[in-house]
Image (cartoon, rainbow, N blue to C red; front, side, top):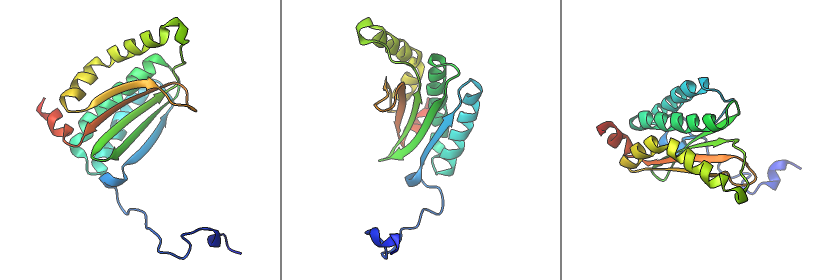
Length: 165
C-alpha cells in the first residue's frame, strides 16, 4: 500500500510552488549567532529579500527596522543567538526579532522596568515607524519560547512615507 493513499489530496491536482519571489511568498526566518557583526549582514539580507520580492520601496525602512530591533536584542542579550523573521501578509510588512533575554520575576518589578528601558532604547525607531503609519512592539515571547519578541509592522505605503521624511 502506498503512503499516497493515506493523503486526502493524493491523485488530485498538485499545487506548484511559486516559480519566483513575489510579495505573496515573502516568508523568511534567519537565525543569527549574535554579535554586532550580524547587524550589517542582516541589513544587507533584508534589503536583498525585499528587493527580490518586489518591495524595493520598503527596503530602506525594513533594513532600518531589522537593524534597530537586532541592535536592541543584542544589547540586552550580548553574544546570544537571535532570530529575525520577515513576513508580508495582508498588505503589511512584519519584521520580528526574538532574543533570549531572561524573564524577570514579576514580584521584583524588574520586568516592567526592563521593558520600559528597552522601549526607550527603541524610541527613535518608534517615532520613524509611527510617522510611516506603522507600530513598534515589545513583549515576552509566547510559550514554549522564552525571551523577548520585538516587532515592527508597517503598511505597504510606508516606504513612500519614509522616503518623504
